[in-house]
Amino acid sequence: MNNHEISRFDLHHVADFLPYPFIIAEVINGVHFNTFLNEKFKEEIGYTLEEIPTIQAWYEHAYPESTYREKVIKSWDVEEINSKKEGKVFVRKKSQVTCKNGTKKWYEIKASVVDKLHVVAFVDIDKEILLQEELKSINDNNERMLSVLGHDLRAPISNLNDITEVALEHKMSQEDFTPFIQKINRQATQVLEMLETTLNWAKSNFDSVHVQKKSINVKALIDGLLAIYKTAYVSKAIAVTVTMDESATINGDTEIATIIVRNIISNAIKFTPHEGQIKISFENNALTIADNGVGMSSTKVKAILAQQSSSTRGTNNEIGMGMGMQLVHNLAEKCDVKIVLNSQPQKGTTVTLVFD
Image (cartoon, rainbow, N blue to C red):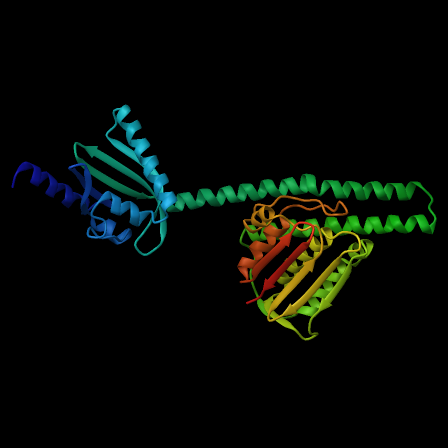
């Protein structure tokens, strides 16, 4: 046994006792061949030497999504070039590896290069990455809530205050006073709606929503919500029709179902013009809310489905926050409700909720 074989044997022997997954590879005629996987690699990442005999095979298994694979390879090649320029004998990058059992884990991958021999170690940083993402999510939520509380809620509350001051400072006839009361009612409803949406959105994003399913009477749910919004749709002379069996039920969480349907009805009222129509129906476990309002482009629909929509004013300048549909999607996912959204500009929007 020559010195090269002894050193290789010793390297393999040592690698089997190390706490990290290791790959040892050699470059032969320009091809990176994997020649050894330590026991920790087989245990944690799962692939065998027969499955990943080359670096190319490794890339295809570890990064099955082609776009991400290309990004990892390009990033690694750039890092290798930079390391050579700096006279380093190692390369270090972070990437999300797909293990043989299908799980995805973040690793810091460190490769030491000596001549044609490559020793690649995988350090598990999955918990650290997930913690960073969780902290970022919490910070994003905090910033969004502060933005809503500091800006979106300030405007309607300020308007409400102005209206009440005018009412207190001026003696009004009953004829003049009634429109003021109606306006106060609309503003108060908007403030309460926005506050409730903000709090529920925050709860859903902090994973504090607990689903408790039971039988819910759909007609009672719709009638209760329409009673809340009666002033809003009557003031716009919107004709609302409800078509469903009085005894129709769904299996769901009462609070979550109420929040989801409330947001959709609220949007239908906001984006339906004066003397428009809203039709609500229930059939085959699917609740449909259709309006003949302003509608949306396909781009806007895609943004909503991707939870990237922003705030939009209604046909009567009603205030929106942009997080209403995000809340709907978040909650729908938690209780297995499928959302089907169809819309055309100037023709209206139809939202169908398919309950499990």
